[in-house]
Image (cartoon, rainbow, N blue to C red; front, side, top):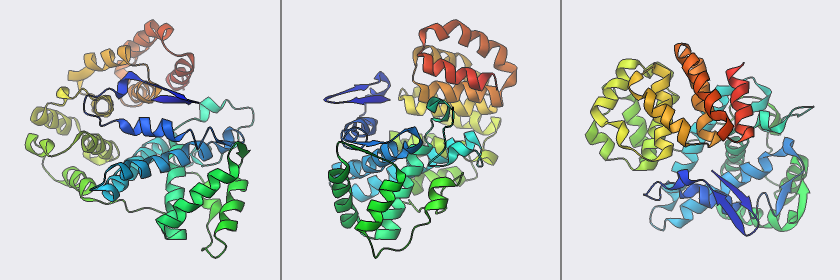
Length: 336
């Protein structure tokens, strides 16, 4: 959604949602001024030191921006990241080496291994260190400041981080670094990010009847996106009839927020809900952001094989206008 540069960040127009619900990306790119630019990972195998730290601090900042409900906002944002992590690991498969937080790139293009894993598994590790190992947010904040001061204008790898953490907290409980860093799949510790905001969405997913228009009106844009994420990760719940009734009740076409549209289109492809095919192709034509287009093409390949001739033709006609890295990643998935 953005690219951090000294004194200037580049941002995608997909962040212009009209409701300020996507400011997290702006916070994320600004945070890179410290984690990523000032403190830099040694190489791409230690990419989590860039994106994991930035995603973790991003949630902290979003919480601090809300003076009345900051703790809940932070936890809800962390819950969103956790669901995104589930989706990313599911796309690779739970035993794939690229779902390790630190992976080996022997003669491998880092772009081929790139995913949300290093962002959100890294953030989950830092949450674990703060909440379960250190046990004090203020003490961990002080550690983060000292870490940035220590490694500012330097590069480091994961071993450097471990040594510094253990020297800073010599009396802390031991950490199972092997499981967190070098074992594929979801983290070894499942965090409880439950809040009123999160629970309201989860209850809608587990209720027996389809979600109603009145229930959707009670959710803000972030909650709607989170709700759709929960549905994407709830395989047994998602059927053609459920999605059709959900749409009839709530008219999902009303949303212009790209994060919501992207997740809704994934659900439509998954159940082969033909009503939105033209909308999806228009979205793919208008939006070049890899976060959105790669999963949609991948979803077509895995969930709707009958559409693949049309999808392949569409991609061939439009790839000349797309970023070459995005084109390469889509081609890998379409040809796999």
